[in-house]
Length: 244
Image (cartoon, rainbow, N blue to C red; front, side, top):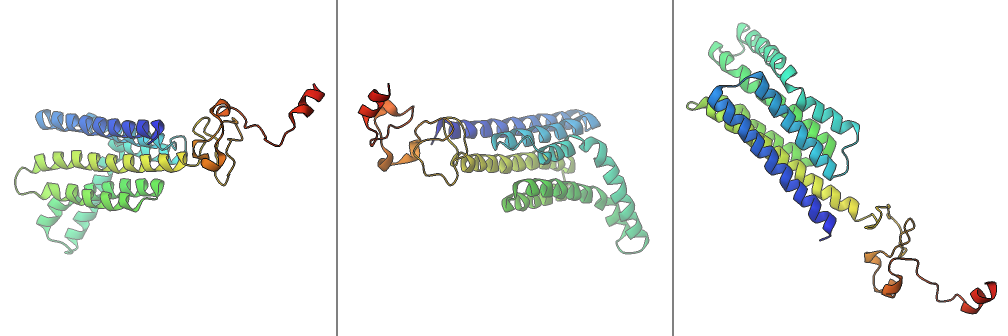
């Protein structure tokens, strides 16, 4: 394992522990003092933070996908309540039309809002990572979170626990993808300068002219030349002296 890969994995672990710990802290405040918009904003910022951190590990942070996903999470406090109002209206309309019982309509708005929001964020993450596991995990953990408000006992506690679970699972999924992406990209790059070496078989990096560790025994050279160009054994030394 290279030093760069070890560093990437360490960053991923720190990102996960930080995101999970901060989410648990916000949930604890919500448990003791009640939920409010500020806590929703903090949870959205935590999501945006580990999105940017994981994509930075994968060296894909400076693109439009990062801005869209992080921005959507950070702005959750502004769209989550309107989404709840829209879903509530739809559910009441179904109840008025006799499609669902009235008592179900009263309980369905919050689980439906959690489900729609969770699947939407999971779909964005899937589109940005092209990782099937991400969408599977998002559907599973969103299903748990959506069912939490229907808990017969300790409903509030179940909702809070599902928030921490969702953040922890999605952060873990992103961090795992980030490390794998970093490893794949690093395999095609010069370990000295980062030059893209895909489809190249030369024992030296064309950019920095340093020997590549994966050159193999057929390209073995003296350690005296490991940091510079490899001398051509067919060059005539006398020709160089004559030219001088």
